[in-house]
Length: 128
Image (cartoon, rainbow, N blue to C red):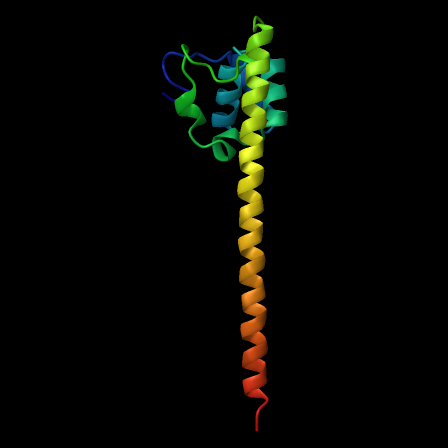
């Protein structure tokens, strides 16, 4: 299901405000769906999660009325739901951090190999 599916109708004034603020339509729709059409909640979400349609692949699919993945942004969320959301977010952040660290490590290794090959090529080129 997409954030702009028939089961969700965004508050047009809030959508217009978000679009005027410079947010992409899909991002604004996602934020409004997550925040139950609450403009302040949608803004909070977008500030914390820039470009969710790009940085959170599949989020549009995950948004459905029976399984909202961001319950802490709902005004009636229980403390347990807020804690659950925070725990989920922390785990996702840790996974992303580990993945980034692995990517950086691979890039450093590739750079070291490139420097070695470059040095070898320079040595060969300088031989008489």
